[in-house]
Length: 631
Ligand code: FEO
Ligand code: CA
Ligand code: CA
Image (cartoon, rainbow, N blue to C red):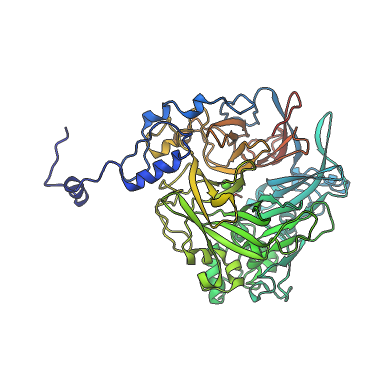
């Protein structure tokens, strides 16, 4: 037994010695309950004092998953650290489209290896694929897909450090990002772009957009070029995606702030504009794109309202190449990850949305009107109420409406500065909400909380404190978790819900505390930083990762970023695909016949997939070798 030096005890030690805490605190019980509520994690979880600590020995205890026949139609694969893609035995993959592939014949002259000329840079498949959705229209198979950002050094090889040297360089970078709509077709050789299809289209940083909804026309959205505040150019940092019940594509603007800067570091702004810049991180120097030095639209000293015209969810009709994309202010302005659209039992449209920044919030929009097939959809993504989530430690939660009464802000400012409105009502700070997916077979939704090194360390950009809380239970969270909520009354429009944690990623081979992860994390399925997520038609949850692929230390045994399948009922998780080292696996959609699964590989390392020294972000297709159904 350790001797206790009562003379040299610290105040904390003295306090603990004289007033010992119970072995299990209320907080521990909350976390224990949260991750075992549905029983699939099995066993008895033990917790240390003051943190969500699980006993290491329990990680090997018999769990429900081991006693349940697997629903996975594949044999899980190992972790890999190489520069290619791996899928299970009985499955194969092929490239469908890669950055630089021509969408029209006129784009075939664009040479990505030398950076290419600016002309033609808007006629090719853009760089760094992200969210995507498939559409079947009059016998045509269409893919709408995001191009989140661009590697400046690769695209501007003549410029030092990839820094644009002129307006043409900037225009090229602007052309390579945004969205592609393309027709694809399957032949004996696999899936390919249908070059010159009338559906093929690039939407980029200069494509005309309409701004609609309650904030459209507000003074904060007006610029010299658009005194109406209803017509803007471009969609930015297109991250996750969504699909409406009426067959349109939703593209979500995430880190839009990085495209702006100021040529006048001393420029002053109205108080509300400055507060917005601060909360959203609109910088003076930019993030290296240097648009502001060559394109005055992005220079906040000249166009202080231009950043307010980005950070929205944008609707695109992929079946009409002449349609103007629409920015829906009703869905709020923040760093949108994706937009998961579901219908309430009464037909109201519910959109779940995450704001991917440390300590920011989870949002929900509920329409006033209802959807009916064939009826007008006007206003269904704008006329309604925006809410933020509050998660209580007793595993209940509520959606807090953002209204002038609850926030003290005007209706338009609530939408333009949604983060500030969320802080005003006391929303729960989250560990970077990435994709949200709703289960088609149960009234429940899941959100990837990818990681948060600032949890318990410092407040969010709005000054909201971020202590460990129910669904975000670990300080300096480097692994991430997936929270799940079950709306009351089986109604996604209900204002209250119950929640639990579907999984806490971790490493039981390295840690014996909370960082070991929940019990459905094992040596055989190690991963970190869940990000992309979608359900298939069978109700399996597909989880994609964007994390540390060093395969060392805390991340030993995890290998490259990957895609796993999760069973929402048993909690079992199995690795299905691994990406090339350096890449993030993001974007997932299925062909109309469900025999092909399209997966995005963003920012691959090495020289994948061509082996010619130039890494190219690509969409691949995964199929069963027997051409069976794949989701
Ligand atoms: Fe673009 Fe949060 O991922
Ligand atoms: Ca993401
Ligand atoms: Ca991410």
